[in-house]
Length: 320
Image (cartoon, rainbow, N blue to C red; front, side, top):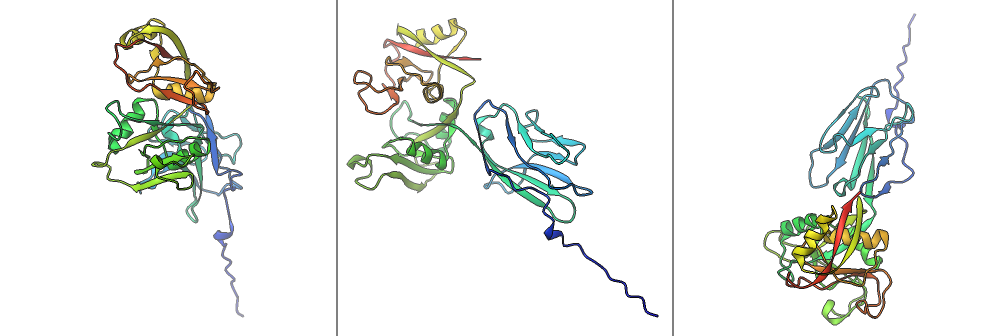
């Protein structure tokens, strides 16, 4: 008598443990708490969930947290600001507290179960504003590293192409080319004109990738919501007096990014020029009018970098 033994194999490819997210792009603001969803359909017998930040320029993983469903371990610079939500036994969503500008980017939730690793990728985008920035020494003075540093000094970071594109659709029209985070140099044009690349169609014009060390341009910075508020103090006062006035009110003289964020998110509208931390004098206009710069569109106007002994008001920033 013969005994036939039938072996059945499980098609692991047919088992999809991770639910597809409803939205692949998650929007938030600086200073907020955000949840990146990662939900299991069912729990494998043995598994780990691994969260990492995806950096296309770096093949090594930027690990954030690893969990086996009971215990977890935190990694990297997000340590102390991340946790798993765990609202139910199939929930492996990542919570990031006090979101920073540097947290923006792509994140991967990976299920490791020894048979078939599965993953999903989400993008965290911050609501914010792009602002062009130029050196106090004049036009086209920054190489890439200097542009990067200048944005950070003004409470921002180098803008991405998608952020610049969004700013263009929102009305940013700027003739000077500037660095972006990916190392390209571009500029947005709403109204074509001869001095802005000729009568080509409106759009984001590009010079493509440039030499990060030797080529010099302006820069486009990105900033998000404030953790405090900006207020104006009437002059007349020189730059040093402006700094001291803000300090006397337990505040600091505002940075360019602070002013743009206050204009964008809080509708700050001020017809008077005021000193900022970089030595420039600017004023934000929400409702354009003839005697407030004369331009037809809202924006932050600039008087450039006047002599620091000249007299203006000052914009102060106070953290909450």
